[in-house]
Image 1 (spheres, rainbow, N blue to C red):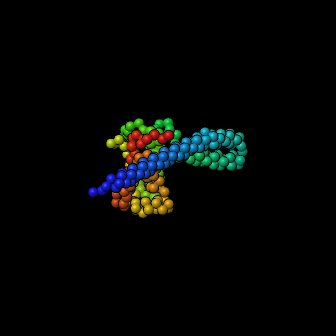
Image 2: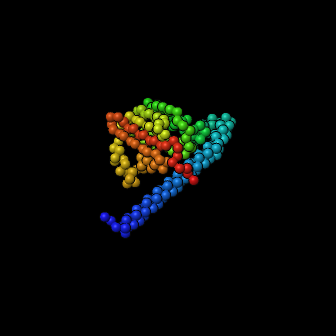
Image 3: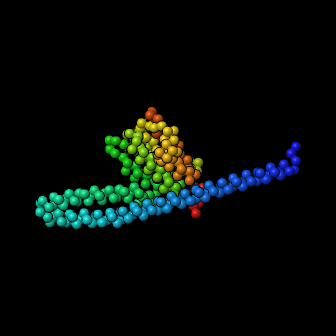
Length: 249
């Protein structure tokens, strides 16, 4: 039987082990708080730049386009044609600026919330004759703005991958709540891909798409599951707790 000295040593070892675990848990929690704060700052900066693009550069381009139209109406035929080309270029630049503003931070996400933003996102990636996106959004509890942004960014990345790589004709976007978690599903009927190879590339730093989504979800207690093959297409399922696991300081 172990003597008293051995018992004391074992107790001391257990205490040190528990202290180490507590320190590791505290460090992990602190890292998550800092990382989530950094993401929040990033989104605030996106919001600021998007507003300046829309309200500053966008409005200036609109004013220039109007002034060119006035000059075109007063100009002779040859000059009017050249001014018309300038107006077309200005209009295209204005549309590009507005699109960039929406991609940086869609105003609809701040004004109307996640579900309206997901509807807008689906419409924005559709291409007649190429890709159709069906949207099924069930009622969900009121979500923290950070969780709404998180799910929107995951969906944005997933649909961007569908457009770039999947060669799909149909996609599905679904949002719902179950068991205290919000669940986001994105499916496409494309060619599929090797999930393990993609995960390996992410761990090697060669590709950041799936690994970036997974890491960002993990900061909020979320999870990501991806299944893909040529027969059933690609299923991306993300879930995150309705209530944030600890509030960001």
